[in-house]
Image 1 (tube, rainbow, N blue to C red):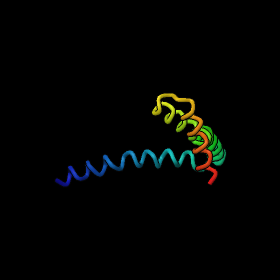
Image 2 (cartoon, rainbow, N blue to C red):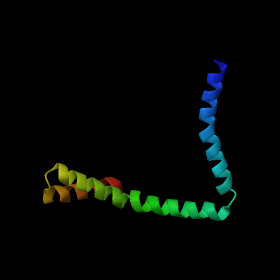
Image 3 (cartoon, rainbow, N blue to C red):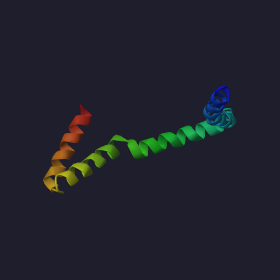
Image 4 (cartoon, one colour):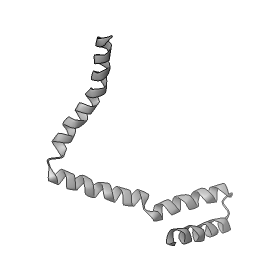
Length: 85
């Protein structure tokens, strides 16, 4: 029983220790931190900015409503008002 518990603990700790080891390689390097931070922010702004999210919702609503042009215009107006308030 004790041996199986030790094996279970080792199985849980191994990935954590591997992550900690990699983090120790990256974290002390300020250049790497800045590079990852700048690139991470750029990725989020590009893929998750409000304009991108609104566009995705507009496309979804247009598909759900059968591709009607008036539905897309209505959705756009409502989306922009909701974000502005």
